[in-house]
Each structure stands twice: as C-alpha cells, then as structure tokens.
Picture: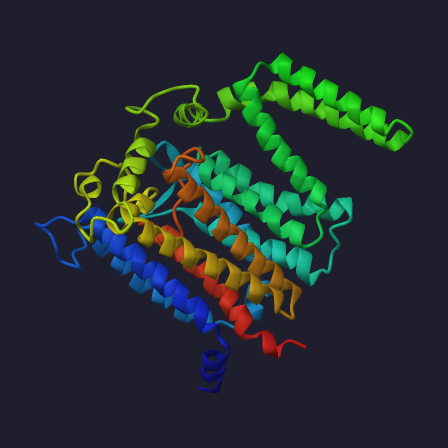
Length: 419
C-alpha cells in the first residue's frame, strides 16, 4: 500500500492528463471515421471503434502493470529485452504476414501484432543502458559506432520487412545522441544528405557533381593553410560524389514502387492524383473543407463516404481537420507540443543518466511520428505509413506508445529515490 501511495504522489499527472486527452480524441476520431448508422454501438467489436475501445481498456492494464514494476527492472533487463526484440524481428521475416506490401506482422490467433512498434522501446532501453549506466562518452569513435550499431540493427531488420516507414523512425535516436554529446557536425551532415538526395532526384547528377566540386574548391581555398582541413574537404567531396551516384541505385532498388511514386509526386516530378497522389490529394481536400470550426462531429462528407483511404489509421488527422476544422487540428498540435515539452522537462530533472536518456528517446520517437504523420496528410513529406501516436487506429501502435510513455513516467516517479 505504501508503494502505491508513493507512486500516486510522485507520478506526473500532467503527462497522464495529456495522454488521456489524446487517446480520447483519437477514439472519437476513429468512431467518426468508421461510423456506420447500422452499427452505432460503442462496444461493437465488429467495428474499428469497438476494437479500439477494447485496446484502450487493455492499455489501462499495461499502465497498471508498468506502474507496479520495480523501476530497476527496465535497466537490468534492457539487453534481454533488446535481444528478444531482434529475435522477434527475425521471426517476422520467417513467419510474418504481409499487409499492405510489408511483411511486418505476426498473426496470433485472430490478432495481428507488429514487432517493429515494440522494437523502438527495446532500442530506447538498450541505448539508455549503454550510454547511461556505463557512463560512456560520445566523443569517442567506439562509443559512436556502438550506439549507431544499436540503432541500425533493428532498423535494417525492419527495412528487410519492406516497412520503410517504421525503419526511418529509428533515425529519431540521432536526436538523443546529439543531446548526449554527439557533435552538431553529424546532424548537419545528415541534413545535408537529405537535401543532396532530393537535389539529385530533381537535377542531373553531373550538374550536382560540378556544384559540389566548386564548393569544395572554395572551401579548400579558404582553408588551404591547414593540411588536416584540406584532407577533410577531399574526403567529404569524394563521399558526396559516391552518395550522389548511389542515390539512383537506392531509389530504384531499395524503395518500393509505390514509395518511389509518392516521392516523385511530392517533388512535382509526376502528377498522379488518381494513383500515388490520391491519398494526399483527398486528405488536403478533407482538411481544407473543415474551414475554421469544422463541419461538426459525424458530419464530414469526405469521412462519411470514405474518400480518403486509411482514414482511421495513417490519415486520421484529416478526419479531425474535416470535422473540427482549424480549431480541432490546432488543439491537437498544441496538446502534442505540450506533451513533448513536458517530457523534455521531465527528462532534464532525472537524477539517473539511464532515465534521462530514455526520456529523450521517448520524446524523439513521439516527435518523429507526430511531425511526419501530420506532414504526410498535408503533403509536406512523402507518405511512409506511420501512425499518429495515441490517435491512429491499431492495437500494436497504441500498446507500444503507451508502454513507451509509461515506462518513462514510472522511472520519473522513482527519481526522488535516486541518490
């Protein structure tokens, strides 16, 4: 009884309130997206909103179990959880079920589970254990290499399942490494790589190479007295040239056909509003038609007549935009921003390195999902098929995000017990 009282008094109820509001808004949006006047019942398990309500109730059980777990368990068994997660990703490649072109699901009776969703939690725990408990320093090459290997291993296994969206989520951990001392140069290189990838798709490879050569010469001229800088410039130039000529191979052989089309549509290289660009086109119509205050709950025509595919999963944001308008979408964004800022504040007050690093990992994963999902629905980024945390339909995603968040809240509730 004493343990439960301590948890109640030390847990961050603001985060729990934000979680509850997001989950509640998500369920209302799923109800609207899947509403059928012939089956209006809230508990009808033949509907998506009925199933989601069941998963919300089971998520409460997950919360209770996490809160009753000794905090030391998560650091003590971080490597075990990470290893089991890698084995589950390998198992998916062998016995997984293909859904929507991705072989990323495991069938357990009548229920399908997506191990990649839980692999993010395992990676966050392993990274926090490696960088935190061992007190390693990010200024060492070996530390950086091991940290990157921890992140890349599940990402590559997920990529082999043709689930590019989930694989890309692992890049969010770079923000955690940056907080723990990774030089900003690496972030700049990553951002430059993204822009170079885009420019290579838009322009001729030899034109890009000529521009890179000119920039390298200017840089070399300014730093010509420093031999180490000259060697670094040469290395970066050669690496950039290799990257440019590898873009075409990556684009043609790594990405799936529908992903290539979505990128081409986003960059304006193709116009295909009936094919690859259909989802985004209809999504923008739905959001735009909501206006300032929306059409009202259950009054969205785009929603009611299923114009937007995946409207209760990846494109749930457009349901909110149509029915609740600018006020609804702004409120959702504000709730997410407050939650992210709250998590960063909680992470900074941790007395344990493990808890702080894990907290930043939670914030990074949620931020990536939030930013990319909303960017997809309004046409700012390619459609890569990742859910909006706590909002999108799906048991695996809801359970995984709930587990991800409440492990951190359990660690935070124990912070005063740390020396």
